[in-house]
Length: 236
Image (cartoon, rainbow, N blue to C red; front, side, top):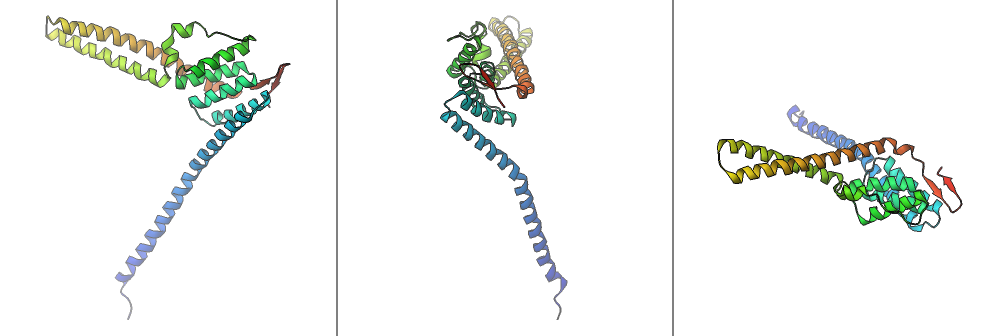
């Protein structure tokens, strides 16, 4: 006696569903593999650069570490720690201009830290050929621009903008309720303070973003060099 078709269909459907599920899992694994490979490659380069920097003795050794760090930059990695380490090994290699640029980018991500300030001073000393160099006066005059990372300055600008519109709201309420001195004072304070904070920190963040965009576009053209006591040697 033949088996009715109704008893065969569930088995076939289960097999088809299992095959589709296996295919979906295989495709998901294939799609995720490049991401894991990229992460593994970046982690390997990071550890390799750190090892090269820790074992370096001569400027050429530090230059090799700088080139390995720079491979991460070329691969799209953007972090304060990366640029900080890159600046440090470039200082040890004797490349003052590129070290200063690396520390400036580190500061955009981290804000001004003792490490970035010391690194910038060392890079400027290399550029000037002196044993010590002071940082420019503008870093003190515009301290907020350097003290805070760019994302923090963006948030402060948004906070100032919010405070400004709170003052506008208070001004609208003031028109409906005459004679409220406290509301008038709050409105003026929010308008002035919020507007000033928004303008100052928005301009600061926009300037930083413009500089970072320029560095992103031109960084690949930089040529790292190792400097000995008698001259310079170009990076290959």
